[in-house]
Image (cartoon, rainbow, N blue to C red):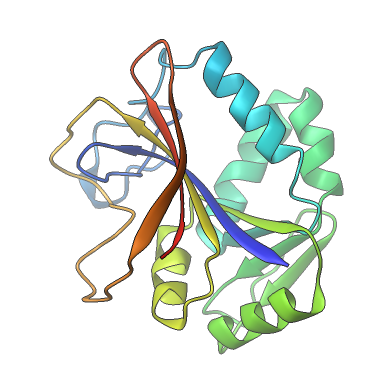
Amino acid sequence: MRLVVINHITLDGVMQAPGRPDEDTRGGFGHGGWAAGAGDEVMAKVLGRRMGEPDGGLLLGRWSYESMLSSWNRQGGPYMKALNNAPKYVASTDPTTELAWPNSTLLSGDVPTAVAHLREAGTGDLVIMGSGQLIRSLLPHGLIDEYLLFVYPLVLGAGQRLFEPDHHLVKLRLVDSITSTTGVIIATYQPA
């Protein structure tokens, strides 16, 4: 199984709350919804193709799991059914975390080891969306096989970044890139 990160980030690496103003205000973040209006057919095609591939399911941090699924279930539509039917693996530091959505499995304790076992035992792509803390916990273990990043022509100067200064050197190679009509660079990286 491959572990694939799919995230929207700004030029300065901020990944916090791209979708809506109230998505994630932790730390007093006031720029929520920064990706609104930048979507186009190019992005939709890439996302549609890639999100059709998480045949291994989704791997999410607890906060992203609760936020994403509650949002999509309120909205309804085709994503709701797909997200509810997909296997979901949820990392949490609290072993008593209750998982409200169907097909959800809790990963607690040594999450990198649990994820390594998932990679060894499964097939297809296991997709991580959001979940910055989870991604950063997996970096030093070399568990991420690919990054599909939507890099917006925007600098926020504040907010949670995909890669915080944790002193983990990760060398990547660009394997594909395309630019949307709105200036979003869609870049695919794999470990070098």
